[in-house]
Length: 165
Image 1: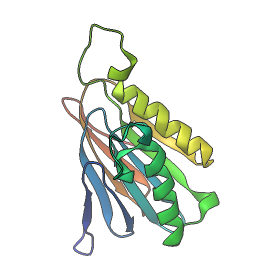
Image 2 (image 1 turned 180 degrees about the vertical axis):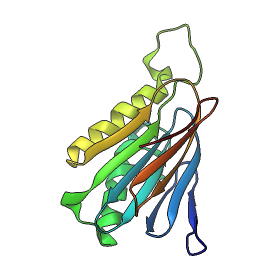
Image 3 (image 1 turned 120 degrees about the vertical axis):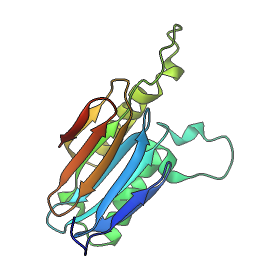
Image 4 (image 1 turned 135 degrees about the vertical axis):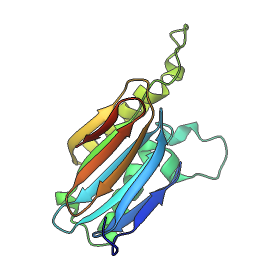
C-alpha cells in the first residue's frame, strides 16, 4: 500500500463506494456476504456487508438497505452508476455465506449463510451483472479487501490463510 491509498472500512449492514487508488474492506463475514460490484475501466467499486437475504424479514418500518441482499445490490448499483460506473460493464465478486453453527433440525431458516449466497446470486442475475469470482460456504469467518485498480479481491479466511480472486 502506498501513502496515497486509504482503506475504506465497511461495517456490518453497511455499504460504501471507493475509487482507485483507495481500497475497500470489510471483516466479520460469517454467515454474512461481502459483495463487491465494480467497473474495471472506471476503477470504481462498491462493497456491501449483507446480513440477511430478504428485506421482507425487516421487523419494523425503518430499513437499513445494506442489511438485505435484495435492497443492498439495488442500492449499490444505483450508487455506482451515479458516481460514474457504466451499468452494462459492472462485474462482481463476493465472499462469505458460511454456516457458522450446526443445527440438528433441518430448519431452512437456520441456513442463513447459504440463503444469503442464493439471494446475492439472484439479485446479481436480475441486474445481469457477471459473477467473476466467489469464495462462499464452509464454516470459517472471512475478511475481504478489494482494489478497484487491479480488481483483485483478497480473502483472509480464519484458519485457512489468504486467497485472491
